[in-house]
Image (cartoon, rainbow, N blue to C red; front, side):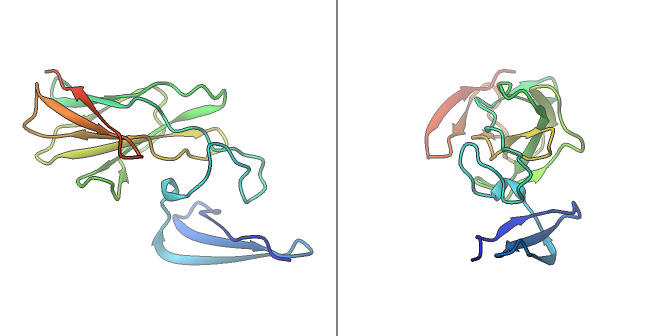
Length: 170
């Protein structure tokens, strides 16, 4: 009997590892080098027991992300997660809708806001929550910050194609 394969970055080196557990408890582990692991793309339900049998659970995605102008920066904020073991948050940015996203914070953010520099391109942001066991949530809804729209309206697009409008204030 073979369980389904689990994918992750087990050793924290940034490469993808694939594990397969077979009857008798033998674990086969393969490493795919030079292909960055983007854990926010991992598909899972709201909560699930991870395939590495660590008894860790993935947190919910941060809710209600918004973007507004604050001085010379883009002020992103979101609602605090309610899980008791939240260690912090990560902010991801892309210059195209839907990603791919790059994490822009170097350490976990412990507050529910982040300030980014205003660039010359439109920016698309998502936020993830991370628990103390270092497991990360799915991406939040995408917040779109369009340059040249200061004082105008930007879109907040939900994961299921839902679109809301957010007023950006100077």
